[in-house]
Length: 488
View 1 (cartoon, rainbow, N blue to C red):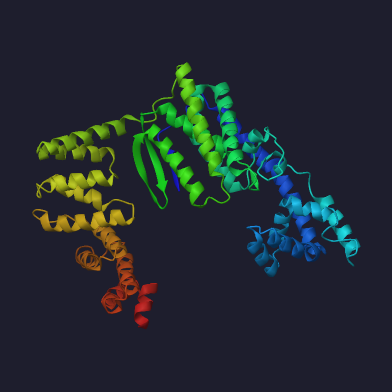
View 2: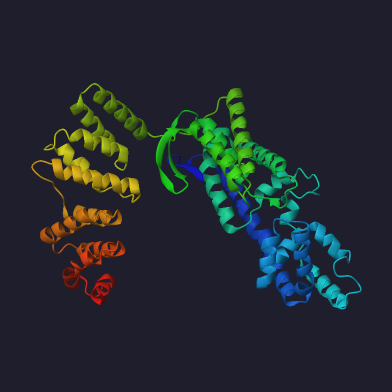
């Protein structure tokens, strides 16, 4: 999974992005209006169905039919039937048009069946409670016998399957839409948005034809906006927040580089196992949006919004480049000054702090060495790479700092907790001992000792953890870890 969000774009209310706001409102009105009303009516009908004779008569033949036709849904349907979970089975039955045709033609429950009259009555009552189809009527139909209805390539972009589906799409619509709207103007922006939906649906129609289910959601059109955004800003450096599977961070990069990253992500998700998500619609939207924006920029000069990349990232890149150049020229003192300037602009950039610290290590008594170490110790992320950087820097700092390490009690407590999480218990305990001696009244002392003792117990070092019991009895006698140690 990969996504990236621009951080430094800001809407200007001198020229508000009214079309983006209108699109969001339309999507929300459709979902909480006719779609929600349809959903409630279907729930009432399903409740009647479950309480009627219909599940007993219809669902076993339905599951048998799935097995006979070797449907991929047959194993799950068989389990649902065994557990008596009738509503999910009913939802599946309602989507199987071939079986429904047999059911309505009396080929499943025949007139010779002893409960035929009761089945017929309950079936008619159930169908009378069903609302007129709305979501399926205006969604993109991927079933084998689906009629060609090209207008659904647009209408499906205003339908959503759940509240989370809607809100996620609307967030990305706003984040990317307002910048594209300000560049294109409202009329052209709306046209491109709808064409993006068409392009997304066209690729989805090709990729999912005959595979069943329905296509709906604004994500294809929103992907088109993402493609437009990347092409619009091209090589301009944009600061993004990104997530790659379970890793997330910030990066400043040319906007255009995100387009192949997004495309590769959609292809990977599609081939690796994207069940229930139309990744090909996303891909179609990205490609359509990129082509539309490239054409617009070729034939007319766009008035781009204020550069989303502020001066800070550009200045930061200049300092980094200068530091690397000076280090290559063996001018380490000047390089250290450049790393310091870069760290002031992006104080949470671990790579910059590491380079500043390693360069300043040449002057272990200098203020830069101490300041760089303290910046590293105060990094907030708790991922393994950050914890490893903090521990390695701590060891180096203790060995080289002149005339000695300058650790404040807050730093000691923070590092002790972090080293415990990294299972660096020797250094964690040393910091706890130092904190006891230098700041016995520190507000985080009890929590720090408790965490350290608990970490030792979790690692199977109970005897070592017991060494902290006297202090915990004094500082936190009611703490859970204290009670656990007393029991043992």
